[in-house]
Image 1 (cartoon, rainbow over the protein chains, first blue to last red):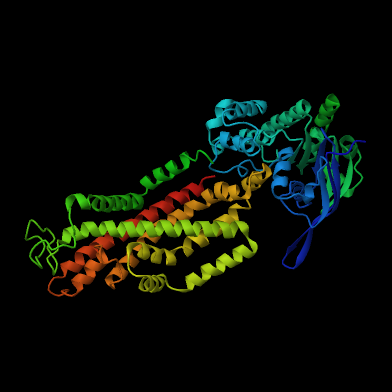
Image 2: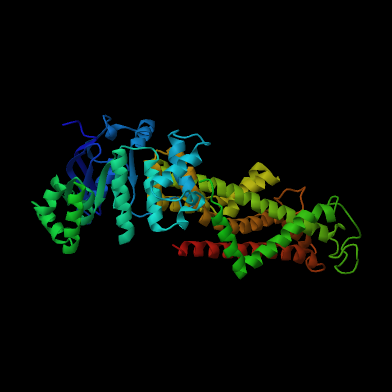
Length: 268
Length: 284
């Protein structure tokens, strides 16, 4: 087996609140191969968002290593870290909170291009139009303030921003949870299409096993800061080994499951 | 970001819909007009003797508001005094807002030891009343316009610093700051372009209050004879009129009205501004 794109080992993060210690992450190890989608599922407070943010180096772990594409991501700092960030991007849960309230769509997409020197000021409008097109948005949107476009469009802008640096891995932290059902379907389709076209890897964090089942190759189930179960998506959903896994599967609406299984067999 | 165009326009629009904001703007516009037209309407030195001393108001058409003990034109003093008051008020507010916002942003964004150190300095300044600080500074450094401005700012920058720090502490936890880190933005750029502009509106609302206080402190300093002696200010005019308060009260009342109007205008504008900003926050 090839070296994985992302491999985290023994990540631990303890939060202290009022003298009480809460294990946000408890010896978590996980790997993501290039072009692969790992679904990370778990109930609220299970540590999945903490793991996503630790992987992005937004939160510092107490212990453990993060290796990414041959680099020791966990040990990088300053300029070296900012340079690697180009290869690993993130989409946040709440599209209304993830953008500077004063920015236009063009500002948002121009920033990563400028910071990593990916397009000269003259080329930027064309690149921005391309990025918008790749997420199914009209180039006319570029001049609009981000806060003047709809939630679904905003999440597409967030995906476009993540794509701007042509990353190898995108961490999606509950990226579709705040969207209504029809928009959620469209955005999931978009993510799957982008993965096919560009060989992207996703770390797909969600509390909704049905959604994760639909897009993931492998699923990891988290509970109380630990990964309690990992396996191919179909296996985990069909025959969960852990208690948390069984509870999550039981929580999937029936109708949803049969529909997703059909979709999955078409994709396979 | 590059195009924060519509936000200020919205705030201005809401400001113009609030009665307090409109009244404040109108009063301040009047004062600004007086200040700007002073050298045109009353060329020459307003401290020079212009006519007979102690002419009462509304008696001599050449001196509509009369003359003081030395025969100086009160109306000219009023207009030139508006210039000094507004200049000192605006400059002191600008200095304290810029210094305070920078210190607050650095403290809030850096956190840790830098935060502790900076905020203890702020505490130290806040324990001394602003007026006493200004008084002490001017008596040591000598009375001139820049010194008076600095002296006032010395007591006023802590408010903006605290407010900016509190805003920054809440903003730095927001997802868009995390998003800026994710795309590899330099921390200095995040602080100055993502955090500071969004922390600024409440600090700017404070600016109006600072201008009002600065105008009052400047007048008080001038009244005590610690203002710049080469500039007419309302405070020095009131001090001058105090000697003849019983026989010619108008000498103190006229610049006093100027002060009241200025401070009232500034506070009304502040009221309107904070209303406009609050309604911006209320919307999603």
